[in-house]
Each structure stands twice: as structure tokens, then as C-alpha cells.
Length: 394
Image (cartoon, rainbow, N blue to C red; front, side, top):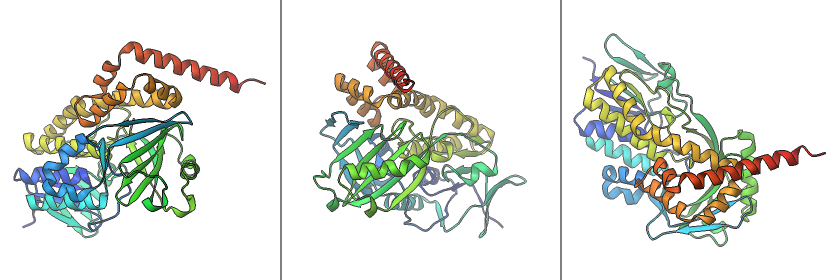
């Protein structure tokens, strides 16, 4: 007799492993399938905010410390040559992790909770059977009452069942370089430069004995490589000595269907990444928790999708709407945003509260105050109008 799983989770990153862990911990029969063998390389800047850490630590327990590479305690922010601003605090602003280690540890936690972890199992399609879902691979077929698609921005689950979330894709490039090649680098400091590319930023994050140097933005990918080379050179780093890797960040831009009955998309597969910062791990883990909770509350069937969609709208989607507004403001005029942060340094503390999960982007905008936001927007409009005028002069 063939095994019918309560759920098959496709994709073994933070979203998939979290969903498998939660379902298995509640007694569900779960298979977690991952196309590669653990540990495997995963391109990611590796930032874990305090709100993401609060979700991951209960799963990992003391193994959390093994996943952490660095603690970021201060950040220096530039905007197209303007004087840098430094923000710091006693507690880490965020941690950085290596995804090969983090994902491996999370998969082990899911296995210990009772999930069956199947590696080297490349899913080629998901189909509706007579009464169950069929998850197909060259190695065979798994049967399930529910499927969670955690297989990334171009995942097979969504394509197979014509669930087509259309996030705005932000191309990203990253190079990891040895700390020894970066003169004057502080191991607990991050550097962020807004405006290196349109609607984007460049970064330098500490990652143990290496530094993640990258650039991303809501722009065409062919602008990124020269921007990254220029950023490396500006910080006395050899652009030719770095191995550059790329990926797509599916940043949220509007509410769209991310389920079909008892098939639920989570994380990047659902297009859930922060439009302002590009943060993905928090949204991956939180959406996975919401999906698992929906399945446990309703059981497989159409109600699971409805409950999941409603919980997404109530929590993550509503806040990502306000994050998109802030992303557009910053992207329109990084220089004016920098000046504005200099005038209102408390705004950075409020951003830190968002990253810690103490407040939301909507509450952040309310704290800033409509009059101050209006002042900034008026300055941006004037700046953009002036730039267009200069461009048309003969």
C-alpha cells in the first residue's frame, strides 16, 4: 500500500524546513523534499533580523549559535557621495548566517520532529489525482493530501498548478571576499550605500571570516555588474578577485492568490520579500508558520487556502504594502532621504523596531508623522522636477 502523506513540502530552505518542522511537531505525516544534498551552497546575503531570529531560535535551540557567522552592531549609511551616517546600538541590529549551515540545521530539526527528509529529489510537477495530490520526480511519485510550495521564485509547484503570483523581481549580485583583503574593516559593522543603482542599494555585511559585498535594485540586471565593480573599487577591493553570484529577489508589490485548495505557496514562491530592504528569511519563516497553522486548523481542502490567504492579508501583506511605499520614497531620491535621516535620526530607531518586530511599517509611517512624510515627498518631487528641467536644457 502506498504511503499518503498529510503534506509534502517542496523545497528545503528556511520556509520549507519551518513548515515541515511545525507540521511534524503537531503529529502530521510530512515529507520534506529538497532537490540537492545537504549542506548545499545557497546564494544569499544572509541577514537575519531580530524578528526572524525570534522565529528560528525556538526551532534550532542551542544550534542557533552554530548558524550565526556575525553579529552586526552598527551600520554606516551613504547616499551617492553624501556624508555617511552611523547608527549603532547595544544589541545586534541583525545577524548574518551562511545558508548552507542554517538550512542544514533546520532540516535536521524537522527530521527530529518526525518529518521524512528526502534529498536529491527534484520535483518536476504537481498534479491533482483522484483524491490526493501527486508530487512527481524522475525518482518516483509522492502522494499527499496537501502540498506546500517552498521552492523559490521560479518554483515548479506554482507553475504546475497555474498559481501565478507576479512579484516584482529585484536582481541581486553578491561576492564573498576574505576579511583580510578589506583594510579597516570592522567585523561588527555593515555598510549600506543607497542609490548605487536606481531603486536599490549596495551593501557590505560581515560573515565570519568573509564579507558579503553585493548590490540589488528594482532595475535591469545589466546595470548591476558594473555597479558592483565600482562599489568594490571604491572600497579598495579588487573587483577581479571576487567570484560573483546572482539571484532574483521576488519583492512584494501587490496582493495575489498564492494558494489553490490545499496547495499553499510560502516564502519566495509566494513573492514575499521586503521591498525596502530585500529581507526574505523573516517572511519565508513567518509565511511557512501561517501555512502550517492553516493546514493544522482546517485540514486539507479549500478552507486551508482561504484561511492562509486571510492570515497573510492580515499580517504580512498589509505591512509589505507600507514597505513598498517607503521603498519608492527612498528610491526616488536617496540624497534627500539621507538628509531627512540626518534631521530625524529617531527614524532609524523606529526602523530598528520594525526589524525587531516591535512595530510595523504602517506604525512607522504613523510615528514619522504625515507632515514630515509630506515634507520629504515635496522635496523629492521638487528634486525630480529640477533634474528633468536640467536634462532638457540646450
